[in-house]
Image 1 (spheres, rainbow, N blue to C red):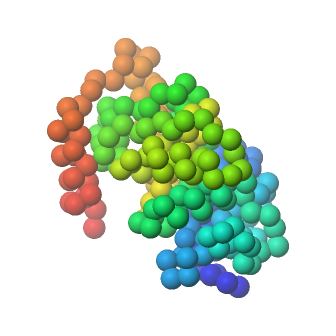
Image 2: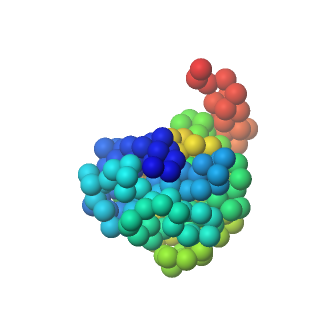
Image 3: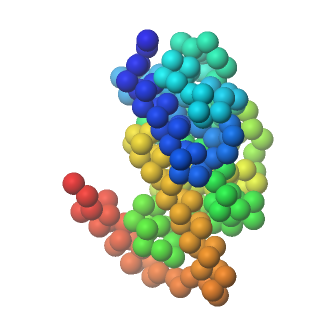
Length: 214
C-alpha cells in the first residue's frame, strides 16, 4: 500500500476530529502531504469517520489525479491542494465545522487575540476569509490570501481551516481554534474579554515558538 504509514496517521487524525467535537457525520477532513513524493493523502468523500481505514484513504498528486484509492476524494481536495501549492512550509491541513468557531465564521467575525492561548498558537487574531463556493480552487486561494501568519482561518459562512508543518500540528490548531472560540463566546456573555497589548501578543507567541515544550 502506497504511503502506508502516512495513510495510517491521516486515518487516525481524521478520527480524532469527532473525538474532539470538531465535526458531525461526514463533515470535515484532514490531509497530509508527503514531502518526499509531494503526494497528498486525504479522507474520502461522504464516509462517516467510524468507517475510515488506512486502506480507504485516497492518495492524489498535486493536480488531483488519484494515484491510489478506490473511492472518490473529499470535495475539499482542490482546496487542500491549492493551499499546498502556495505554502511549501506546510504538510498538513484540517477543515472542520466546529460549532463555536463556525458561529464566528457565520457572523464574519475574527476571533480576537484576547487569550494567551490564541497569542501562543496563532500569534494574533484568527482571521476571517471571504465567502467562496465549495469544490474548486476558490476557497484555497482565499485561505492563502487571507490567513497571513496564522495557523488558522475562519471562512465566512462556511467553517474552519487550519494548517501545520505536520497533519498532527494542523489538528492541534483546529482543536485550539474551537477552544478559543468557545471561551471568547462565553466571555462575551460576561461583557467581553479584555484585550492584550500587541507587544505582549508578540512576546507570548515568540516564547511559545522558541521556549515551550521539549
